[in-house]
Image (cartoon, one colour):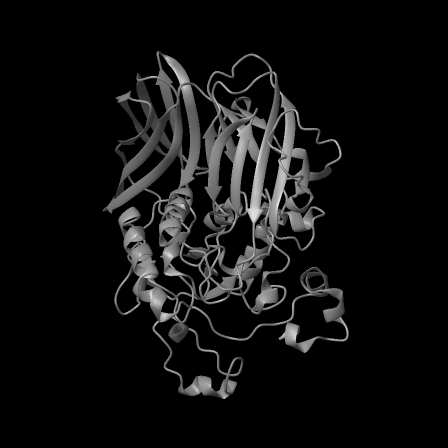
Amino acid sequence: MFFSRDRKSLCSLNGTWRFETESREEKGEQRFARDLDDSPWRTMRIPVNWHLGGLEDYHGRVWFRRRFRMGKGGTEYATLRFNGVDYICRAWLNDRYLGSHEGYFAPFEFNVSGILEDDNLLAVEVDSPWEKPEDWPNRKRIIKGVYGHHDCRPGGMSEEGQRWNTGGIWNSVELIFTGQVKVDSVMVLQDLEGSSARLRPSVLLRNLGKPVEAEISMRVGGCGFRADAGSVRRRVRMGHGTKRVDLGLTLDRARLWWQWDQGEQNLYLFDLEVRVDGETSDRVQGRFGVRRLTLDRGWNWRINGRRFFPRGTNVIHTQWLSEMDRRRYERDLRMVRECNVNFIRVHAHVEREELYEVADEMGILVWQDFPLQWSYDNGVVKRALPMMEEMIRTFFNHPSIVVWCCHNEPQEFNLRELDVALYRFARRLDPTRHVHLASEFREHPYPGWYYGDYHMYIGLPGSPCPTEFGAQALMNLGSMRRTFAPQDLWPPNWSKWA
C-alpha cells in the first residue's frame, strides 16, 4: 500500500545502478557478493523498465547492484521497499539474502534492521522470462496480462508478442526508517447510514523487534474542506510479526464522492500514528472517499443511491510503466472526460498508483482487471491468489475503483477452476465492491473488426454490459516508432499493423 510519510524517515536508493545480464555470468560467480568487482558492469538509471534503459528487447535474468553509504544514527529499525519490480525479484543486502517476490505491479518490503552498515551493497536479481514454448500461448504461467501476451503488444498475439520485454526495477526503491512498530496497510471500510458514514479502518501493524505494547491513534479530516470525525485510540500488545487492529469512527454529514458527471470528488485524509514507550514509532497519511456503488442483477448501476449510465472505454496507457507519471495520466484522463466518458477499464493489467490518484481527483470510475489475459495453466492459482490480495490491499482506499475483474477472455477450463478460486477470494477480501468472475468473449461484440460487418450491430442484443467493442485505430507516429520494429513501419507490414 502507498502512504505519505515524513521525508526524514525515507532514504531513496534511486539513481545509477550497475547491471549485467545472465549471458555474461561466469561459472561459480556470486553476483550478490560485496567483494565482487562490478566496475566493468554497465550502468542504468533506476527506476526504469530495462527496455527503455539501454537493454532493448531482452528477456531473462539481469543482476543489479547499488552501493550506498549510511550514517550511524537512526538505523536500528529499517525496511527496504521496492515499489515495483517486473517480474521475479531476489534481493541481498551486505551478503545477506533478504527474500524474493513474484509479480510486476505491487510494492513489497524486506526487514533490514541490523543489516545496514556504514558502507552497503544491495544486489538484486530480476528475472523477466519468456513463456516456455510448451506453455505458449494456451497454458501460460507468467501473470502479467497484456504486458506478456496481447494482440496490441509489439509483435502482436503470436510468439513474437513476447518481444520488447517489460522487465526491470521500474518503480522507486527506498529505505524506510521507523520505530519498532510500523504500519503495513490501512484499509478504510465504510457504511453509509443516512447522512453519516461509519468508518471501520482495518490497520495491519508489523513489529520488527521483541514483544511490545503500542498505542494507535487515528484522526480523519477533509481534503480542501473542514471536516473532523474526531479521533480514536487503542492500545495493543504486539508479538513479533504482524497484527491486524480494527478501529471505528463516525463521519457526521459526510461529503460523498461522485464521478464527474454526478457531483463533487470529495476526499478525506486519515492521519495514523503508532507510539511505543511514549515515542512516535511510525506515522502515515492517506486519502479515501466515501461513496456507495451498487450493481443489481439487471446491470443497473447506482452511485450513492442515484442511478447512472456508465459510458466507458478500455485503457492501456503504455507498455512500460516507468515512463508514466502524474502529468501523463492527467493528460489522458482529461481526454477521457472530453469524450464524455465516466468509466475506464484498466484492461488486463494493473497501473501505477498515480493513475488511481488522478481518477479519484477527476471523478473517473475504474473497472480494474486482474492481469490475466487469455489462457493459463490452472496450476498458477497458488501464485495468483497472493497477487490478487496485493492488488486489493494496495488500491483498496481509492473510491474511483468500483469493480475487480478476475480474468479477461479466459477459456472454459480457466473459468471453471482458476477464475472461480480468484472470484471467491476477492469477494472475501473486499465485500464492498462488485467482483466480476471474468470479462468473457460473449461480452465483447466485434462485428466489422474481427468478423462480419459493422452493420451487424443493428441486430446485436449484446450482453447487459459490453466490456469491449469497436475497432482499434492507428496511434500517432511517435508511438508507432516506439512500438514497431523499423522494418515493419514502412512499407507497412499489415500483419503487424492489423
